Amino acid sequence: MGSGKSVVGTLVAERTKAPFHDLDQMVEREARMPIAEIFATGGEPMFRALETRLLPAALEPGSVVALGGGSLIDDANWNVVAEGSTTVYLEVPFHTMWERIRKLAGRPLASGRSRHEVESLFERRRARYEQAMYRVNGDRPPELVAEEVIKLWSA
Image (cartoon, rainbow, N blue to C red; front, side, top):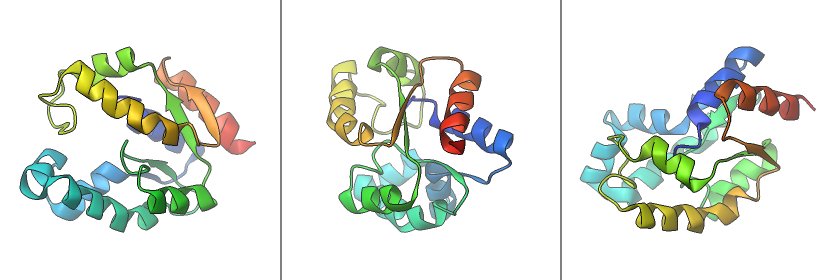
């Protein structure tokens, strides 16, 4: 959450003329409701099941994909992604992410939670993120982050 993956992913896709898939948006389209409503209706298990089911379609060869922050915590999902994809962790300090997300509606794992609770969630997920092939400083303007990702992806 708040790493800039959707913005950076869109820029990378536009600049490389690659298809772009945002897994969160795919889930919303499939469910025909916003993520917050999915969580309210079926909870996180419903959301994660949709995410897992749609993940293979998101991983179209040659595409740029923004994956939700929790999608890779599931070992099976991580294995699917890590097997045939270039993975990039947009590394952003927690305080930056917190400033980006704390006032946004529609983030069920952040809305109504304290900074400490959200930071704990981030820390639990970080070990998986750090398994990505590449780590990129995401605490910069998105255009610069996208340029670096493109260089890594093209290498």
